[in-house]
Image 1: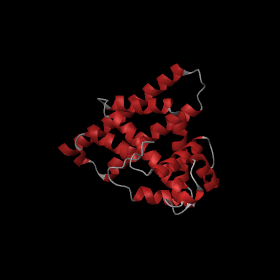
Image 2: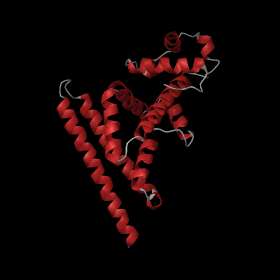
Image 3: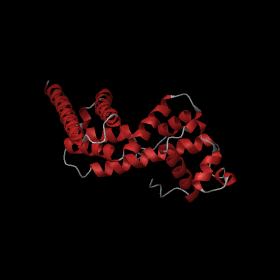
Image 4: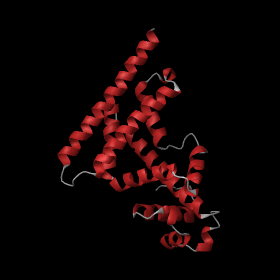
Length: 214
């Protein structure tokens, strides 16, 4: 986590929560004492920065997702084409499988009806334009690939984002079920997903070009 603008104790709190999350703890059952114990700060001190436990946990998840997505997007800028960008995303998932697992658990949290979920949704809704989460990152990648962004409707963009995300999710599920020694299979699957993604985006570009000509 690279939250350089956060107060040191806030950063320590977030890092403690993320570490506990990666260790598999159920965030809905996480106590303030467990958080402060992991962070090495006093229980009274933490309430100088947060109103309640839900704000601590939702904030930690939000900033971890945001920083991870920004870091990955900065890396994707080094790739010259969509295949390279998609391959970089999938490779990142391979190298940081525990982070990938946490990402999908975070999505699950956002879909439930807990107080943490409500606070996290509130943070996502009020985030700034320069704060990247997964769909924002994919949206930028797609816009860069399509080139004539002005021709993309909101529905077009949402469809393409979900198309790419669905392939990422499929690869994540494949990763979770993969035997440790099956590296050649992993590489082949990654290449197929990259080619398939490129084909689908290219087909969409052709369709858009046809609509413009008409």
